[in-house]
Length: 252
Ligand SMILES: NC(=O)c1ccc[n+]([C@@H]2O[C@H](COP(=O)([O-])OP(=O)(O)OC[C@H]3O[C@@H](n4cnc5c(N)ncnc54)[C@H](O)[C@@H]3O)[C@@H](O)[C@H]2O)c1
Image 1 (cartoon, rainbow, N blue to C red):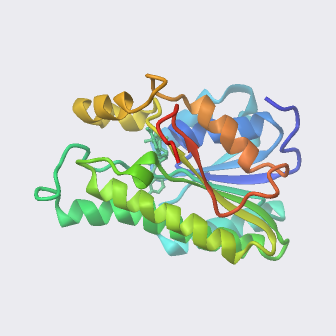
Image 2: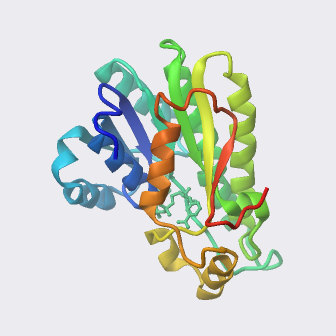
């Protein structure tokens, strides 16, 4: 933990009611930032706010679906108007979809839903984050990808495809805005202990864990530790890159 690393900074975290997003938002608030946690799940957002403890005063919540272009645009505009700027946007909203379904049984409906939330949602959030940050010429955008997008997980066609798309988005848009002080980066975690994995098929969970040389799941604190460096002012010469966080799974 760094004291006051995010003093005076304003952060929006999507998928902020749970797991990785909640951990990143909490840490930014603990280190001095003002944080807006955004999620579709109103009940989880309420629970998150009450579970945060002493930094709750620095945390606001908004119900926003990242697949709604107008809602995301309105979110960015309202936070920028209220606080004068948006320094940090972390897109952690996501769903796993089917986790043990081969492509011949994977429905087009499920595929479209997973891609819509994970990939198209990342596009929409990045688009309006860049637009909101451009007048100040400074910003840190972080998209949560996945090892699945880099290496592929069988039985998860929608998830794997959507996360590969997030890699492309980070690389392309990072270069697009590289002549500003706005950076666009990603993190590709291997399996992390969060509520998302409660619904993951046990065989898939075993498969993903067996691929991690450290032999365990990652923690949300390990994700937020790397994430908070990436979205800090210190991380000024990295853009268009997706950082591995995989307990040794990724080797290139
Ligand atoms: N947990 C893992 O093993 C793992 C590994 C690699 C990548 N990731 C990625 O990390 C991110 C966070 O996952 P997590 O494990 O914290 O999951 P989680 O289920 O704990 O949190 C995800 C949050 O996203 C919200 N959400 C879903 N659809 C949304 C939408 N349309 N608009 C706004 N919010 C929405 C959910 O309500 C939930 O609160 C996801 O993108 C996930 O794919 C997770």
